[in-house]
Image 1: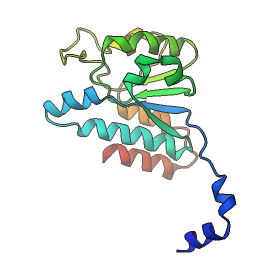
Image 2: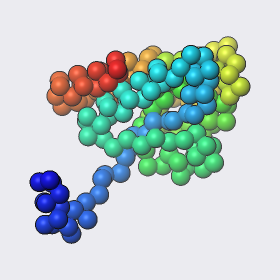
Image 3: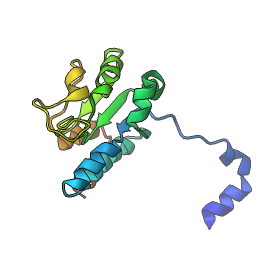
Image 4: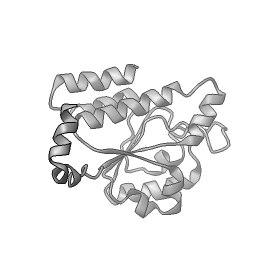
Length: 173
């Protein structure tokens, strides 16, 4: 109630507040969720995304989710404002994402690819090499070995140990 009263007393101040633009994005892959749900559940995907999100947020970065369809339709518009794109558990990736992500990395973007990135194609079939699809083609990208490693890399610059601890706890949840 105190917050509501404060907002009511200063409406113009609060009306002008805006969140800073996100510089970090997480690729949200519905196809990965569908395939993983058919194989027993998408709990690992949710946990990896939550951990990466928590690690960046605790550092004060805004984080968005980007849909693969937007990247395919207009890669420049979908990725231009982001400095970092995380693929925490992008288990299923189709080959059409490779070229736009590789181009984005070559223009200075940083791509974090987690465990089993691109392990399966868009039809759910396993690939001969992992990472497959986009992470394999984005040769200049630095792919992390696991979502835990990615969270540690993201959380390593946190200003307090408590912040990093919260990020790791979110990973374990």
